[in-house]
Image 1: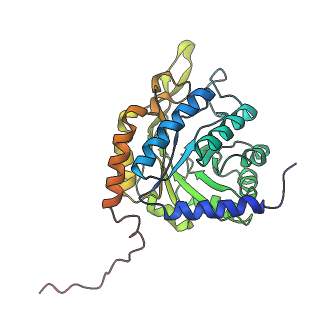
Image 2: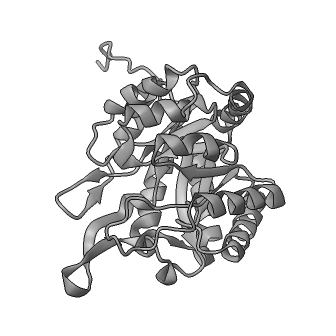
Image 3: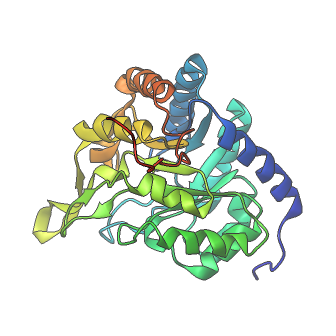
Length: 303
């Protein structure tokens, strides 16, 4: 049975975290492996990511999924499931003292996941699902809504308002690319300022944006998602220069062995160098603080 009232304790915690995220400098980072492969692997990844983000003074939220419910194939690895997954994420949260972000796919998952996750993520394919957004909003947690690959940026205003209607205004909107043909995505940098009219901080998913859906041929005519990992720095640099408030980045110590989205996970070995560069770009750009600047179109006397 779904609750119809907002969780006030979680809302108070969500308000505090949301305030920290909005004011974070130069940006905040959600990062981790796509899916929980094992408890040992998750602990090792969080330890390394936290070490780097601490050294660079970048606010960090650890990300991993307990269930990948929208895999291309019925035989694809999905993760450990909600019970073991939440147990592992809680252990990571306690051990490393980091906030957690993970995704939900059904209304029934919202309440149990909110007991662990500080940020509830709505997958791009589900960004318009009213009942899911309402259930997430009622948890009181910060809600990160990924923009559907099929959506105009203006659609995200309505998605955010669905969460707002629960009394929870702690909403992040996430750009993750737009469908370009059947098996490719493009990132339209105009979406970053355009989505701001919803009144929400903007996140850029710089790894899923490089997916090539159903772009890899498998055995017996099967298909899987490919990707352009080598272009992750290009998209990340561009999004930071465009003034995003936060970045979402999937990172793996051995991307080629990852059972999910290996082609679009950034190698841990190269993570410190890229994050340092992105921080430098963020400190140089005025896009985040100057996005409300008004153009002066009065005639300019040059005679």
